[in-house]
Image 1 (cartoon, rainbow, N blue to C red):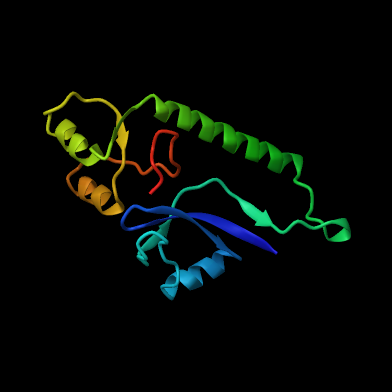
Image 2 (tube, helix red, strand yellow):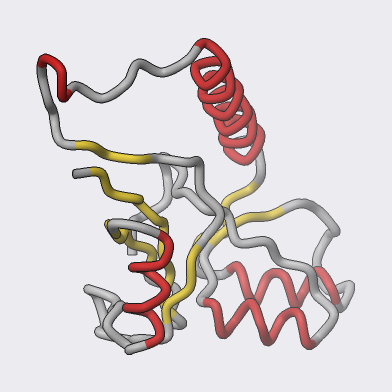
Length: 149
């Protein structure tokens, strides 16, 4: 049996993985309020941008999963390479951690030097920043120096 693995985030900013049999299975469970954050039990959950991943049960012989084509292997290599470059670039950006929202507001108001920053913010905080005209992008993966929520 194969599963689709989705990166999910609740409205409180907790990021976690969900395994579903299909996109339709995820959609049905989401519509029924069955997809729930393991950290805070919120059912206000959305999918995050992620690299494609399908997990299958290990099988042998005639029932074995088909081999990955060279085209698929190349696509996977490119995706891994792009994510590695994005991670490396983001590691060079100043990490302000839990002060991200306040520092973004200070920069926007001209009270702090304009520069790229990164840190943590909940989905609700990102919406508030957007309403204030402050661009903030949710990165779909943690970096080495960031705690997992």
